[in-house]
Image (cartoon, rainbow, N blue to C red; front, side, top):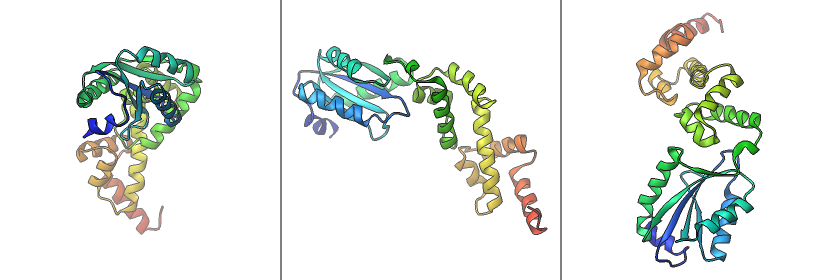
Length: 236
């Protein structure tokens, strides 16, 4: 079980403190997580574990009443911004799963503290990072809230800056990328309109068709037919 396997990497204690660390998207946290893990094991205070489900998160388990000294060490040794949620004390390691879920919820609700705030990173570079991220993952479920958690910025700040950077709102920018990809796939003929819709993140084909028509001026079906007619006449 999870608790048995974790016990092998932790000192014995009458109780433990759980802390969740969140690293900025464009940093490689592996070096810092390993550094923290080495420090905790050397001092027999606990351990740090990277998460396979989210490489930007780290679960830190320390023996009770030792977290403040650990946080002080992090603030001195880490030179990158970190968000953290803590204060989940557990009696036994079998309680880890429930406590971890509670920490995740706190982080999602932005109920966190910061070490080395992100103001230290150039704002223009951060927006470039974010636009690149959206360009790469636009077919996934992207929201202001998700980007806020990933890039350590408020939703309001992202909304305002994104429009300044790209000339359009986040939702419109994502729609433009998706419609552009849809047009490319519609020309290839090997994908159904329904499959194109779902691949782009729209589970409702009717909604996708209406959105496509609003942007392009014709339905996906009409667009594909017109493209076929142009090809048959030798027009591209």
